[in-house]
Image 1 (tube, rainbow, N blue to C red):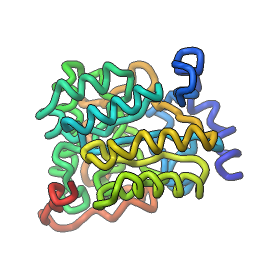
Image 2 (tube, rainbow, N blue to C red):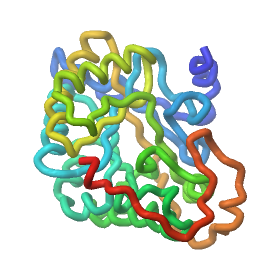
Image 3 (cartoon, rainbow, N blue to C red):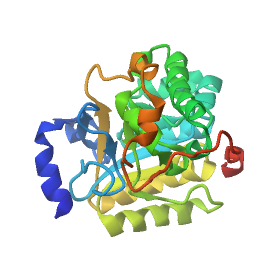
Length: 293
């Protein structure tokens, strides 16, 4: 009920439009039921439940999201699976991966998916000093724009690596016009699971909550193999896929970045239960992202 009443109050915050309906897709495919248009000026966080982000979904609706790519051949296999079911997703690219595989990122965009970012190097933001942390965020957007050849093509959507932020970086993101994305369920696909087990876990967790944002990683073979099964199960169980996009013209405000007062940002109230107090030290090791792959 909390979700339902909150969603009713979103009329002033979100514009909802139809998208990729059954008539636009081959018979028997899952399709994208609708597109939700998110205004970064009014919605600062989505996913993670009503205590964290703005509810944007109805019962039995799912948003598909993919982190950490692109990387051949698995991002391409993921795109093939999505195209086969005529659905659209949001990809949170890592800057170093976008730089290494620009053609693949351009394919993501060309096939109608949303391109957000996931930092430049997949650094653990709370372990970085403030200047390094905001640079990590900013560089990720800049690299994605350069890789696509169009900065405006990058949605102002960001997911913190490891889903961990600080009060300073959340304040910074909001000032930059960035929407922070959390998740509602995942498939544990960073673990060495079979595609069958991975798909089963994803569906079981979706069934528990009945709506939300699904986290997957397009850098893994097991995820690429599990995705067709996940999509078939969503279709057979009556779930609908929703595609999220920003309002037309919404973009990261690079000019504001240099004007944000770091001391004011650090002193801002914690914006969510997932944010951590800003670290008082000037360094700290970055977790080994390569070990996650």
